[in-house]
Length: 397
Image (cartoon, rainbow, N blue to C red; front, side, top):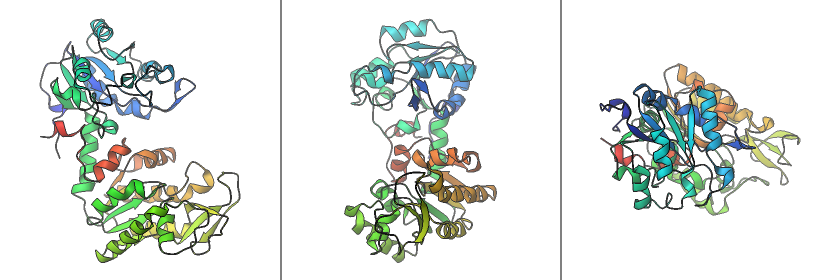
């Protein structure tokens, strides 16, 4: 899958007004940016546009203000933080359309940057209102879409504005689509899919779309207990989606029929309280106490998963193996991170499918030891379900 890319755009950009859709939806704590990851991800496109002398306006959403101007969701602190981490002067416009934007652009020198106020302060953004999209595009000469994490939303800033401006894909969007396409459409066998996280329902489309392409599926995290209960095993107070028991049983049967090895935990780390300070211990999956809950895969399971992963040439991982934010329940996720680093170093292609998995891999210090860590949670899931993302489709060659 190839996209019409900024890197291949031959037009002169010096002094030109460029609208850049970025993902500035960063974690905030007490009015300050708590994590720079998403800002740093856009430095390649900003460096390119600055080097070519463009006047750059970044647009993005932050949080869920529901179509109203809400101070806690203002992008002003994000503009300040971008300036701090880059050393560049970054101005701020108090709206994302109209005379405020026009005036801010007029004040920019070539290579200058202005961050526009939260797109979602306007309810028309999420409705992909064409009048609003045209207003966003007004006064600009090029649109660059670089927000893969928002590409699954058909909003005015991700899809609508393309109808009113020459448009190209930024380097982050291109890199995401290339990496995710490789594991979805052209994987090298053996191909292992790791699934975790809380819910089976979040992964149904991924399982159904990829089951015929993979050689093995490793199931951990909270979703594993739905599979275990479907097999008739006691799961105590562990998370379980009762309405997905039949689906879990069906997937186990389909995997067996197709010769796909679907591995479930054989031991888990349990506790009686959802707390890092509570007593925790490891039990076999057929011995989970009634008053206990499983919060991580156990060491035997981790090593069984590692054995499969060490033979892999392609790995896609979506969903942590346990509650990695609490140290007593982080070891399963950490162990898989370690072996993915080994697989990558030996020439395997390893992809982390965004969201909580990306947070886990980065938090545990393994983000630079895999082939690709996606910036898109929901976007990655929909991509692996085989869907065409509305924020990607306009750029296909």
